[in-house]
Image (tube, rainbow, N blue to C red):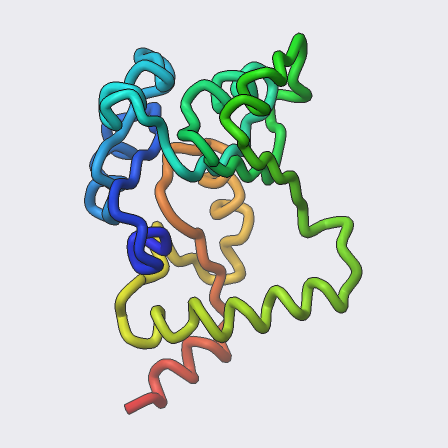
Length: 180
């Protein structure tokens, strides 16, 4: 898990299945919270003795934004990288101001190529060495030959997998067999 490799010490993830719970713990999370059956704000408060968390990475948006304000620690940071459930409604900004929270939204899609290249360079400098050293390992759920792209897409659409689906070409298979 990148967060642990970068020095995070108390990692919490939200999950909806036992498989996600087990995978999160295996990858380095200290706690998991089932967002379908548990109140993540209350669980975060319990896990942190009421302090809250320093960093929240949110892909959901909607009513989670206000709940994130509550779950965040004083001087916490909230990174909004998607809003799968839409924009926040009836948002109370007071907790953000009184806790001095930083709420940063970003997406790669709209960035110019030069910025995307700079981000790639930072990944190469900070994350690739962790992969090369085996500190973090890409999670590959399943590999498909390119000729089975349709089946791979069906697995993707069905959900329930943890990790990446990889399409391989005959040339890639030949390269792997030629490696020492």
